[in-house]
Length: 131
Image (tube, rainbow, N blue to C red; front, side):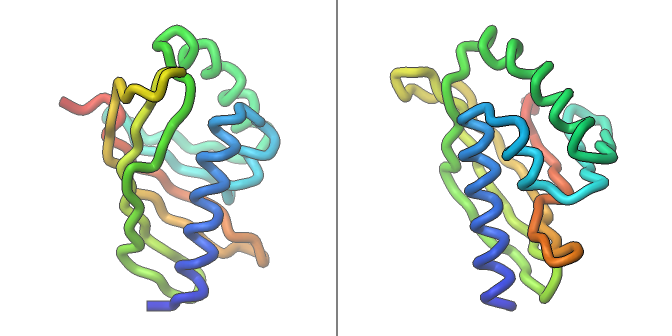
């Protein structure tokens, strides 16, 4: 396992959650590599660039508020594989209310990549609404 790659992937994963929690759409977009691919709810979605991601992130903010979301906590993070330019990460995320109570937990698998000197999350597959 490439320890330096694992370290970089963990850092960008934590930055992703930090910027998501802050709803800082521009910084959040900078934690990704593009095209960014997401597989959730039985569908693949390809986000071609940061501008498209920012627009979608802004649209999603009201849905989060409606469900009572205040922040997300990574309950667990495990680097499964780490090569020189790609890292596989298994994560368990908890969505929390303002008082810290967890109202939704889900497993997700991410791939962080090194592209043109930038570590970013390039693929996410989540069981966001799985039974």
